[in-house]
Image (tube, rainbow, N blue to C red; front, side):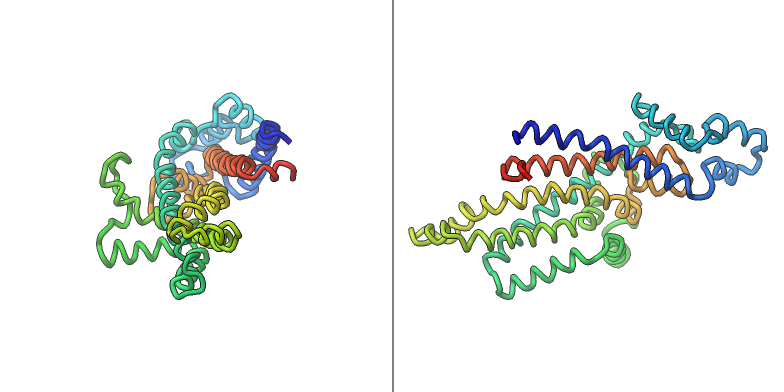
Length: 317
């Protein structure tokens, strides 16, 4: 199978997956009790029954469920993701406004994961079965096992409440303000720790496997310095598998932002999603879920393509 046909096949799979995500999310929202008008009425007891009925009719909440779904889907296909009933804002506006914070947090976590994992993995492979290798593997296993929310709470407890180096919640400053890099540190470490641990284990295994191959023995027999053998020959071949795994881990960083943003009060899409669920804002829940689904699917698509480019055998699976 050619690379172009492989990519076309993977792209075509995106649409039924997104349709399934939207149907399941819509169904889950519908089976929970209450709707956004109930929340509005609870916050504004002076609203009359007639006004409540008018609001339900305006937003189509009296229509059958399948009519509501296909009206929403028709709007999405035309670029209209609906409105947030409690604030009367367009869902697309909320997503666009919150997206930069989520992207910044995800990029910080991804860079943190790569910067920590690659050198640590190299060190563990070179020092295989020595004390440093055992320690790094224990730390990696701990990083994978610890839940994001628990790690975030511990970092807040130590960094914000004990050492008093960070505020408990992120300050309300523009994202491009230089001091925001400091406030990205704790949530960035939280969201990137599991990915760093996974990448480190992959890096170590890949490096250790390459170092046992004949070309490495030949390079050493030629008298090349060990540093040159490791960094010039072994590292380059080991990075193939690490690169594809790193692309796959982007999906876990995107999905993990929902928990991390909530723990740190970071004003991104994940925090908006939790707020939308609390207020039963159906259009906002569907819009953010669909957006996160697209981001995860695209990350996996890039990983698939990267894998197929680096290892052509995968195209024939």
